[in-house]
Image (cartoon, rainbow, N blue to C red; front, side, top):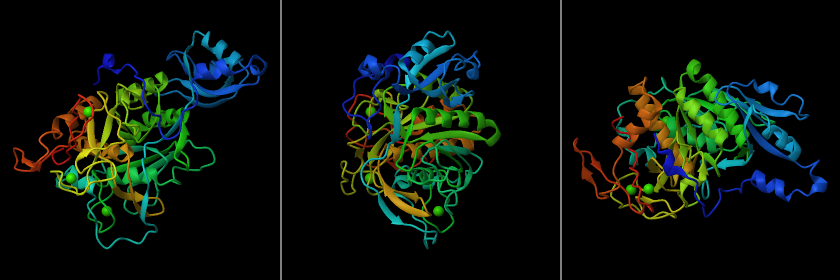
Length: 427
Ligand SMILES: [Ca+2]
Ligand SMILES: [Ca+2]
Ligand SMILES: [Ca+2]
């Protein structure tokens, strides 16, 4: 659904929250000859579709840490320069890439509202859900649609969430339980239950959630862990009915292996919705936002859940304006609220968080609503529907649409590519 010619990597001004590992080439060039034998760097090795993954490492004298057979064929390992050169010369190998660090796309402080499982007496409609008019969508049960949250996990027993399955690719953890809070927050924006007199409601209430834990307690992981998550989603998409995957994470750069995995996972029928990133830069320099096959989401500020720009200003710009931290550019498909979003949190709690991490799951929930209406829709069709049904950036002042509903856009988009604002009322 994206034009590959338009997505050449561009230099970006700032990195993600945590700097990525040095590029493989750089890491190798700084290794002194004396240490060349010992110095091993973490890499991802993509092998050809026709090759047997387990055969390739044989005889090279290293241990494979992760391997993938479904979304993409390949493995992760720590390799010396000599081992990398031998693999690069192997006709079965497509590419050797640095196994870079990946982090959540959260920005700014968290405010924890409550912890513990005591139900709130009433249910709040969060401003983001209100701003995209998801509460006007008559469907209040999206349990038919499986949504994978590739993140820090989910609070598996949160009463406001329907978590149907989980898996972890983080060493030292036993399941997809969330020890950070980020993944639970993202999950609640997608699919917190409604009509339960508790907490919040999501864009696609009661969506069937799958916790795919690839990031640790600090919100950090590796490219190889993300690849393991995408591989698991692809492998389980049919049997578990997973039709949407949200990735509120990223790193600066591009990975051919991840792009191949995402292309194959999308071809298997999974709609991927991802954060554009929080570097205030062109999203074309950040993965997975720059994958040609995903729906990348930028963030706007909204303080009152209503259109028109009449709410108080936020720390990242006026009400109904493009969030100052959000990445932008032609690779972004759609915008959604991403500042001071109230949602579910670890330990049965509720919290307020900001970032394109919070914008992405609004769009993932909208994709789930659309797929509840059109179960056979392909990912490309889902993306086009979200764009077609979105609200144009102008006018900002409340303007009735053909149904009489008041809608308004947002100001401050820094580029010449005016992505619409998500609208979830009519999906
Ligand atoms: Ca609720
Ligand atoms: Ca507003
Ligand atoms: Ca734009």
